[in-house]
Length: 189
Image (cartoon, rainbow, N blue to C red; front, side):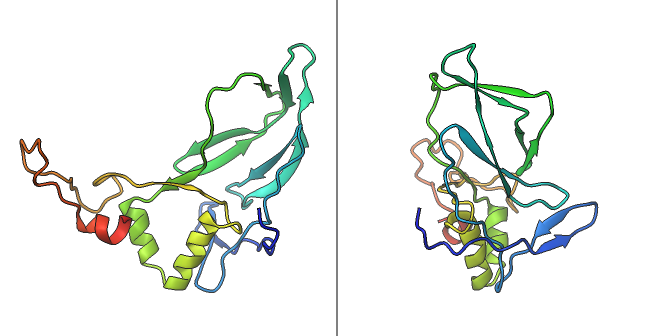
């Protein structure tokens, strides 16, 4: 990580009713995070967002070693992470215990990211160039959440303004009629 990151800028919160606060990003201002720093071994960093207005609020804690099972760590009262419709929620029940077996590995995390659907691309393109730059930096730069992966759906999805495929000719198993659409060439590629 570069040490040149300037530090965080607070959320410009806008209330859309029903207790829903969002951080507004414009051509002249977008909130940023403090530079990310990895925690010391045996400790963790938690970022929490909430409907009440928390926006990636940082806190720290430490894991407790579990003497009953070698290779495991026990986090007492730790947050439960859930994601619904793109909103990440952390809940901290008082009786929750999470046991991690640090000797067992199931998969390697390659990174974190999101999806560029037609709807996302249409909304991004509707912004001024300066606002687009702020928005994309908030996702992919060191001042943002540092996404390093993007999923681009093939053809239309439920977030498209019309249904389309790449090979609409029935029985075209050789894909002679395969064709990218305007959505691909103007929004996804």
